[in-house]
Image 1 (tube, chains in turn brown, cyan):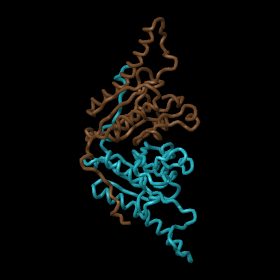
Image 2 (spheres, chains in turn green, red):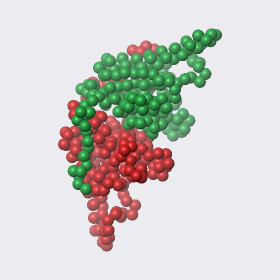
Image 3 (cartoon, chains in turn cyan, green):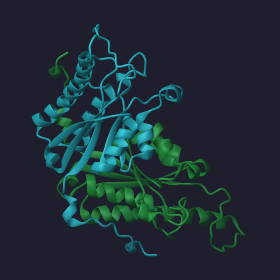
Image 4 (cartoon, one colour):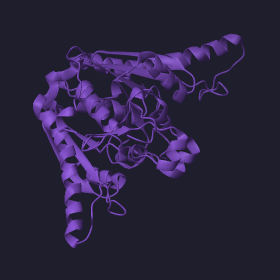
Length: 189
Length: 189
């Protein structure tokens, strides 16, 4: 078999269409409201520095997905009084606002530097919601931050990035949190 | 905490320096000599189409790593006669030539389309050799093809991509083989 027989096919018309990058963002478990997690900030920074560069911004479109996890008991850290059905409605509303504020951080930053973008919110289990979204919007690449947990921690918390790497229907880029960013409890983010 | 407090730092001078992409390439187990595996061809095609586009070729440098696996018994499929020490030397020489021919396919293609590149060969267990190389050359991203095996097949053959995702010291992009490329035995590649 000759070396000339291997041909990499690149359709000319598709080559320079924007690469659709799906970035999953979530809230920090330690840094207050509405701070994004260390690992998703790392993933976003990496994407800007290493993929979406100054001279190739038009070649990418960043899509931000935030998955809202339904809280098991519906309570948060504030000393709220729940006395009427409206109080619970209010709780759900606040959760939604929180997600919007989180997305706003990334969308605002993209607008500042001129990168085409959009963002949206889904509800459910993050692993499954992300894989469902991939099937729906067909990103060219899915970028997820990872806490880079060791095997022992991984057993207890599971990791979204590991599941997604195996199950998402598109190329998956996992970006581990910087070592110097690791909080006291590495399960935090 | 205000939304303005989150700042993504992009050092201006580093922003447009070439992104160093390490792509692992290996031989096909089914397609003859010196054909690259289906999954590494997919990974290479993806990289050209989705990252290294016509107008941003200068923003990337592709590095091709081929890891030669020392054959356990030293025999290959040919009907060679081993009667002298030189016969074995010849065997090692042929193995090296095979690796060079494999690299040449990718290097030649990059030159044709004008993408900066280089390639080299290492010996040993692919998983470990790849992780060692990452520590040495510090790529911005490591791209590996994957056969996308199901859980049962994975148990028996292990997968290099899974190991690397966890252990390599840089962002890892796993690109699964296209479904339509899957050979009769999915363990083949």
